[in-house]
Length: 413
Image 1: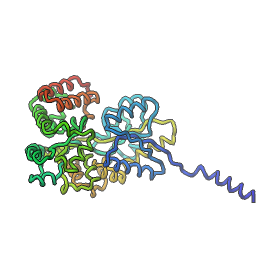
Image 2: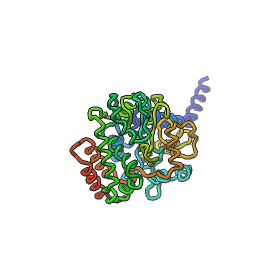
Image 3: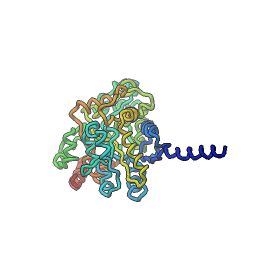
Image 4: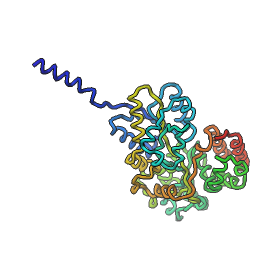
């Protein structure tokens, strides 16, 4: 009897190593609003289904808050397993320092070069011919969101573009409705850039940011942009400015405000509120003035780790993030567009379908600001836009001159 028990114990001990054990992987990101949390949960569920475990490392606040924390941890020798960043130049120094996992073999095996679109997204992950990050979505920033009921209750037709919103502003104010909601910080800069694309046009926007064409940046078309911002800032009572972007979107959802200018990620907030695009609210790409789409979005990097189990889990997560089913589940919740063209988006909202139509058939698709300018220059421009918004004594001409000066001093790409 004792011999049988010993044999059974030995068999069990020999069998144990063949049982797969989950690897915990800390993943840092700044997706903390209602719609974002619902979306990131889809990533976590898909990764956990591989037998590993997503350890959520959400950092409250915006990317401006999270990026320095993320980079500091990696540089300081306390890396996470994976981290969200935006496509662009943010991780270049980390890649050059040899701190990021090379994903080239995985990218080649899974044919990312032909399955992920547009080409600019994977290009942003590529350094010296090697792939160091995985794009997970396409986010466009140029949208105006309006609450239909607010306008109809006020006896107005829901606006089809920015100019109609401005024309409706006096009547909305008379009804006690904020024509435009906005949050402090980067949403102000986003509004200015969206107005630049809608009013000056894509070509003039790219000429200023990427081409560093100072004649264009200081010329009459960009002058119209700063004049439009001057009109917009006079619509907003400083007392109504809220701390976070999702709070500003929430004012539109509640009907306290008529409109908000925000990226397509705002769609996730309307989805959580169970509102239907085209029925309860409208989403207007290019602020309704021009159907445009930039190629911003989110990517994930994987800091190097000496533990081979961690490395294995990192590669599994990278593969999972762009798997077709994961892409559909995540982006339907996030409001962004899938990075793959070969997935079924039949359940997409009307807003997502508008974005897909522009992406697949439009001619006005262009890079995001972080793909055209270094982060320091972008922060300086953001400061100028925010100062202009908040300081009535700063003229449109002064703000434009400061903008041109930053572009002139910006380092080459």
